Amino acid sequence: MDWKSQLIGVYLKVCDLWDQGVWVSCQRFSNNQTLNITDQEILSIYIFGIMQGQKTVKSIHGFTSDFLVGWFPMLGAYEAFNHRLTQISDVFAAMLEKLIDASENEIRFPNFRLLIDSLPIVMANARRSSNAKVAPELADKGYCDSKKMFYYGVKLHVAGHDKDATIPKPCIVGLTPASHHDLTAFRQVAPELDNCDIFSDKAYADHQLQTEMREKQNVILSTPIKLRKKQLLLDSADRLYSKAVSSIRQPIESLFNWIEEKTGIQRASKVRSYRGLLVHVFGRMVTAFMLLEI
Image (cartoon, rainbow, N blue to C red; front, side, top):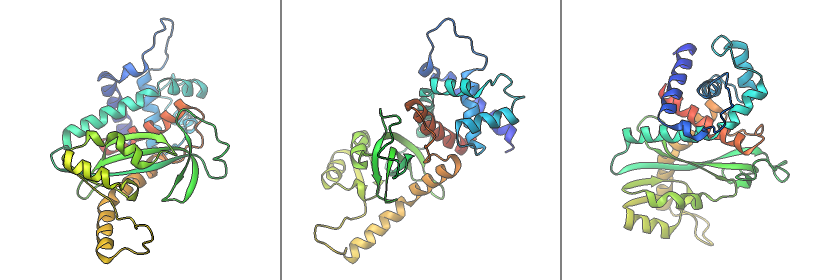
């Protein structure tokens, strides 16, 4: 698809979602506000800019000003664009919810298989993490075991449908502080799941939860087996089982790698506010969804 068709596709999708009701997330109550450029155009500019490899709001504005001024002649200055974007930050989460609902209607069926994991969104690395103070409403300092690093930021939690020969499509997306444990986050959505198999890493291992979900919700939660206290090595059967579970859940890691490659979602050092954080995370997740569809 050429870039013009992609831009038109993004705009039409944004307008469709807008007409489905996401506009209520940024409803204005002032009778005196006159807008030279519509919210739909602002959203489309941001999403298309990410698709074109621009990783910051400033670079997106510069790219649009340099190459798309004929499409958006009323773009205006960067400061005004950034202000409008943060004003309507809640719309991205509403758009993502609509996209997930539409996807669920297409692919959900009994006894499906879910893959779950989390991804660190880094606003400040280990050296700066203790002094970082941006978006304290949600962000804090945490530790990412898979990357062996401390960081200041948030965690993106995703559950995706396992699909043959392709990356999973997200069906549950959540955001928590970096210090929030994966299992704690999962417990919040676990009661809503039933009749499915779930594959995750060791962080989600909890015998009591696994038993309750199996007996009450017909859910099999499978994780690699942890070493018991004072146990140095797993036996051969447990190693094979753990390897099998890790192999099945590998596509969720491929999904995260793909999202990072396409949107740069993990690097959030330029974020300067809570609303800016919402734009960064949910705006990029919306972009990833559209890349899968457009």
